[in-house]
Length: 150
Image (cartoon, rainbow, N blue to C red; front, side):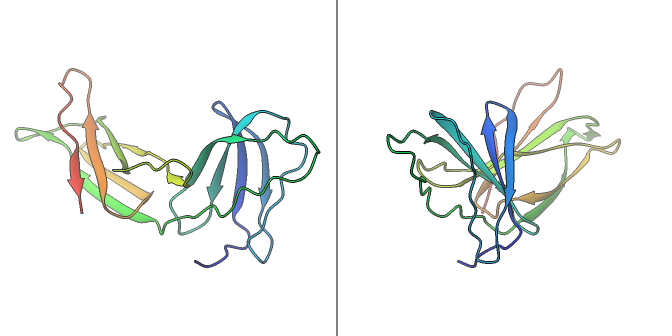
């Protein structure tokens, strides 16, 4: 519920960041020269899980500013664990941490990923708080079910 002065807001086109601004002292931001059409916004701030608000319509008939409302960021939550197959640690496995639900019209925490080290350990420092789903993916192994953390 608090403003995040200095937070970064990025305009995303596909997978590319095409513009970035910093929020003022009141947490407000203005992106200028946004071409008409659909776009996504990503918000980033220290201590928070990144969030993205997608498929926004930046089309106006009269050239006025579009109010996208609040981009709400959740506190960052670190996750640490080990990936194993039986008793064998899996180095180089990909681990994904993501929210269980994605709501249209809301800022959604982005999927966070990490790769396991030589002993199979992973660390994700800026994921959203629970509930989240955690899933490990490794070459040569069948994808198992995601684990729900509350």
